[in-house]
Structure formats: structure tokens, C-alpha cells
Image 1 (cartoon, rainbow, N blue to C red):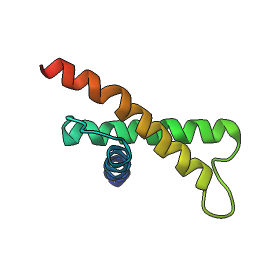
Image 2 (tube, rainbow, N blue to C red):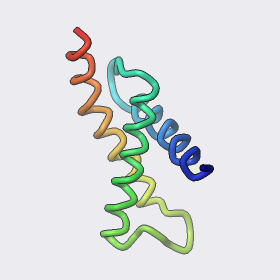
Image 3 (cartoon, rainbow, N blue to C red):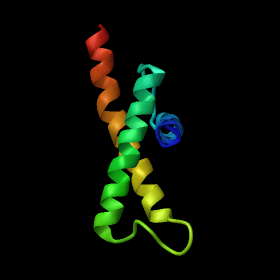
Amino acid sequence: MFQLLWILLIGLILGLVARLLLRGPQSIPWWLTMLLGAAGAWLGNAVAGWLGVGSTSGIDWTRHALQLGFAVLAVALVAPAWSRRKS
């Protein structure tokens, strides 16, 4: 149960940072921001594991950068589609 809450919290944080990094408004709801951030974290972890940088002896900067990059990509792709759907 706590792992699911942790995933959703990290997803919300990554989604919010991704929205801050993107230019212009992203008219998506908070729950979609959280899901896109969680998806970015999942994809970033998968790619980091594939590249062999998923776990290091220090802070996993490469893994975190991949997570954020995938979250930004997810928000950048979904936000315009979501706003077109609403109009």
C-alpha cells in the first residue's frame, strides 16, 4: 500500500516539475499530471536498468534525469491532445 502511495507521490512531483519546465500552459488535470509523471518514472527506471545505470553507489543522477526526461516527454505529448479533446 505504501509503495503505491510513494509511486503516486513521485509521479506527482515529476509531473509538476515537467509542467514547470515546458513552455506555455498545459491544461491537463492534476491526476493526469500525476499519472504521466509516474509513467515517466517507470520508463526512466526501465531505460536506466537497460543502460546499466539503474543502481550506483551514490546518487543515481542518470536515472533521475531519464525519469524527468520521460515525464517531460509524456506531458509534452499528452497535454496538446488533452486540450484538443476538451475543445
